[in-house]
Image 1 (cartoon, helix red, strand yellow):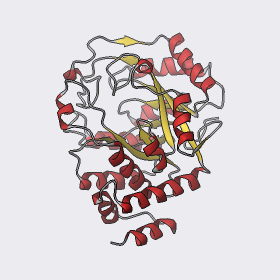
Image 2: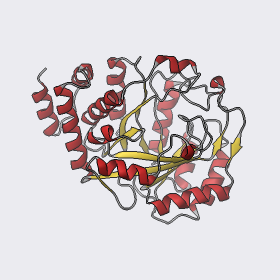
Image 3: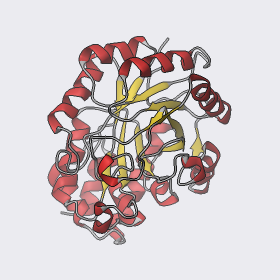
Image 4: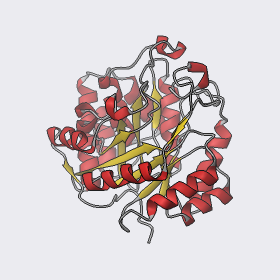
Length: 333
């Protein structure tokens, strides 16, 4: 294949095919061809978002050992990192949410572990919502849900959800690929917009796996897709597999952008980095509280970035940052 032909195809508004994505994934991350792909992804992301990136902010309602045993997650019981359960009070949740509003986050995510009681999540989220500005975009990051519960999230004022079929779902996790996919369908049928990502990327994942996942995420027409590398948790079995470089992650971020239709405005990466931003990422996350990639219970004291630090990374990468509610998720009125 000629890289010039693929880039011309992208500029004409066409999504690259699986075979074309597979070819780009096979290129060396530091090759001239890959740099051209990164430049095209950056151009396209800026065109779709009018050069304005977004910073979304997430806080965890609870922290608990989780029986889903996702090997890459610090909450997994099997990893033995967290052995006690804690939960925010409604007042603490409100404080986190209000601070993110003050900081200028474009959307606010409320996260729980997969087994957290759904009724309790609705109760706390509704209390939080009463203290938020009406224009604040509220997103849920929760476990698999029935169609009934998806409608209840919508009725509670959520604009959307974050939900992903993770790489090697069902083998590196105890969760079902089919159930993850059904949850995405349930959320969308209820009128919730779904954001997703190709994650968590490790050196063991093949180009075929990545191409298949990019094609799948494109098929659900999400608010955003993107790519995030796995952060190795010290002492865990999966940490022995290693970690990909930021350069490889940036390459996959760019290729994912070219694999999405133009209706997908966002292209995320995590954790925030300049390489990701110059390769077409127009969405970062700020985080406080528990974090599945961290080994401390307050990630703002560990790996977590702030809205301010994410803004700085984007500006260093020649991006502006949106002022106001997210354009990736529709606002609930």
